[in-house]
Structure formats: C-alpha cells, structure tokens
Length: 199
Image (cartoon, rainbow, N blue to C red; front, side):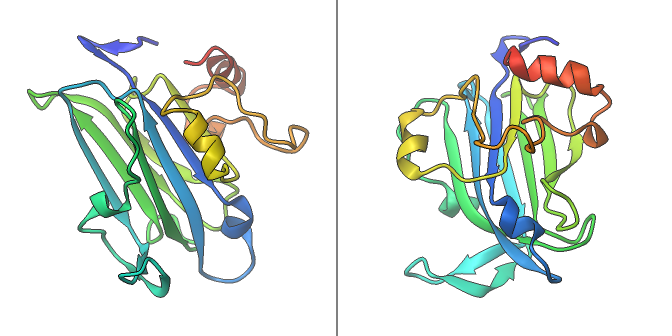
C-alpha cells in the first residue's frame, strides 16, 4: 500500500475509547473517546464532523443530552502545539443501532479538492469496538482502535506521534489493534502484518 497520495504523505489515525462504557448493559450510554490524527500534511483541508456527541455546559460539565450534529467541532479539539497533530476529546452516544448512533466522519482533501483520506466510524453498543462504515483506500499509514483511554500525561508524552506499538495490558483477550476483518476486505493475517510494520 502506498504511503503517499502524490506529494502528500498519509496521516495516522488512532481512536481511544472506553470499551467498558461501550458494552455495558442498557439501551443507550455515553462513551468517552479521544480521537488522535497524527502527521497530517501541510496545505490540506481537514473536515471532521461528529454526530450525537454529549452536550456540555459553559463550565465543561457533561449534560444528559446530546447534539444530533455538532456544529462547532473545533470546540472539542484539545490545544496541543504539535505540528500536524489533531486531538479531540468528547463523549459519544452509543446505541444498539448500525446507523442512528454516535458517528465520527473524517475527510482530508488537497488544495485542489482531491480526496486524500476519508473514513467513518460508528459506535454501535452491540459491538466491542467502533464499527468502520466506510473507508477510502490508502487513507492512512496506520489505524488503531485502543479499547481504553491513556492518562493525559502518557498521551502528551507521545508529542503528537503515532507509536509503533501499544501494550494493552491484556494481550490474551484483546483483539488486534487494527480494524476487524468484518470492517475490511483484507484478511486477518495481512492486517496483523500491516499493524506490526506500522502501515
């Protein structure tokens, strides 16, 4: 798989999420999420949208309500002074539904509006991890779904980079830290090799 789209190197994508919150009993729940986009090339247009994000008041306290579509996603972005790095922190609604649930949609275009990267993830509470709904081929050098949230200090120590390896603390039961075979046309062995070599 190529690592560039013409003159543009491909970025990395990592989603930290609370698996326990995603899979707990009941109809609906909110899942803490950290979205990390690393090594975004310069002079591109990044468009990101969130659906069914939990509302906060002016003090940042979470409310028992959500925005069907977040009109100001920049307010969810963490202030990090790392080149080419975008980090978003929020709580996402999770329902036992394939479409009408919390959704992340990410698109990166060149200055001439050529599509470079695009993907969508949905938080279906019947699944163990966010479900990839669509994926533009060659979008990212690496994609990782982490079933836990790092401590803020640990995340900051990465300095906006995508680590080559992450130890989950439960390798015996944790799935590969790549999209599952149900979400991809690649077989499991190729996905594992893709993750181990960093894309």
